[in-house]
Image 1 (tube, rainbow, N blue to C red):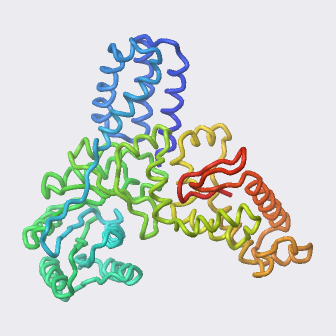
Image 2 (image 1 turned 90 degrees about the vertical axis):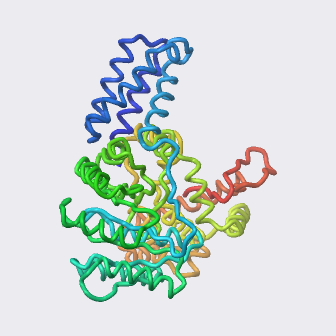
Image 3 (image 1 turned 135 degrees about the vertical axis):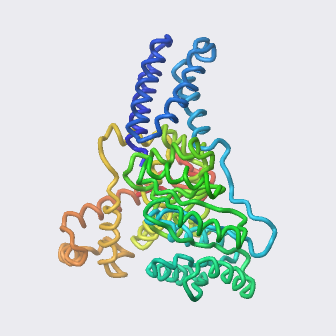
Length: 451
């Protein structure tokens, strides 16, 4: 989502860093460029003015002029101010000790509220909680059916109740959670196409009846400043506690994410960057600021690796690589892990400096290439996956037809696979282990080399 803004800012900083010293006019010129970049990213005008003013005040002071590397100091200042703009130290979901704890989810229709409720339930379950979902959108039966379908997929119970009174359904849902020994209730309320008095009054009645521990508003990142205006209206009437920003993986400009905290005073607690039900993570302002400035996000990358990669499996794979026992089945398992961790482009964006390399190459990551690779491997027999050397011309033609690709695609994959296997054996890749051979390199714990 922030790619255009990220590219613009990195270009501005590269120009600043190339200068031996910075004058006040240099700083002013950079501030004008940053201002334009933020406005093009659909950031709220008042937020932009405040942000630029804070940076300029620090950038023309002794903090920069006395530095031997003034360009780098300006980058650090922008990073700190951007982190503050996104929420500073971050905010966590705070639940009281009562059972069940209650989380109420509000937002406009189409913001991704129902899906966000299911994702939140899934996240809390991973943290050891026993959640129950309560469907209160009585105006859209499809929304209730959707929540039930998501609940079945996650194996999390959903209470839909009877009748047409959402306040009564919410209260009975909490009671049902007690009876079923559930310690968290997530109430999915009804939305409208726009903020209106009837909706606000209904949400207020539900709030006063069930007295939630936390009220979270789902904000659609794709709708830009409209989302910020809606959040501001909710903040005045409902006083929600935090924001779940949805569709952060879209191609919008990202202004909503950069504006909502400053405009509403409410922090972003969670960010959803994908359609899968595990694509919800706690929002860290400092990490997001680093991603926007092209500095990567190694901490989140390691967390994803630890969450999705089994240490014993990684050690076994390392041994197979070193002893040339690595097969296409292992390759396929690696592709699945990449998808579980959010996709190749998502992982590359977390690696420091990769954005610049991608920009120089002027290329985009083709996630569909991974699907084509998987299709080719699936078209192989078990014997062929275990021993690719037996794949002759006729077998290659059969595999290509089965995968719906050209024979040259199969040839290319086989060649790359063999080269990778030789390279890994030569260097003796040992994830997290100690090298025994000169030239051997080491990867972070649980991380295997990309192919």
